[in-house]
Length: 93
Image (cartoon, rainbow, N blue to C red; front, side):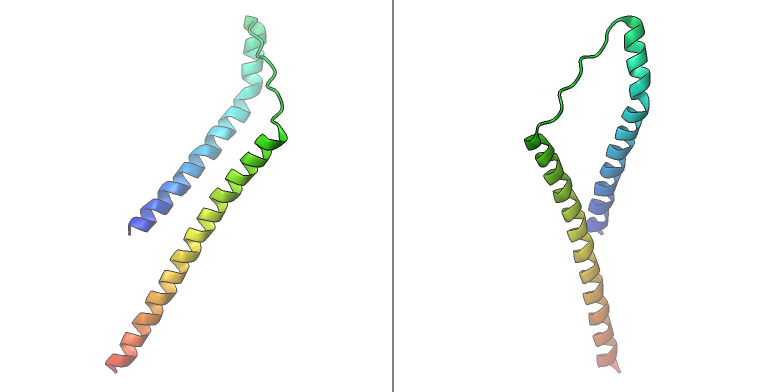
């Protein structure tokens, strides 16, 4: 049962990250307009370096691999439990 809560917490965190990114993306044009009207134009952010891009890609791959591994382990456990349950039923007969 604890594993289910860990998985739920992980996916809730991912959903929050995606929601935050969506809100930032939607509000960015409005933020730029307000900054221009007020006179506080934001400084242009430098493009991420190749190393930073690779690190971000690796982090994303790591998170995805962890999620897939958790799903595979959960699936394997369920199959083992089903198999053991079937063996116990046959032994009882």
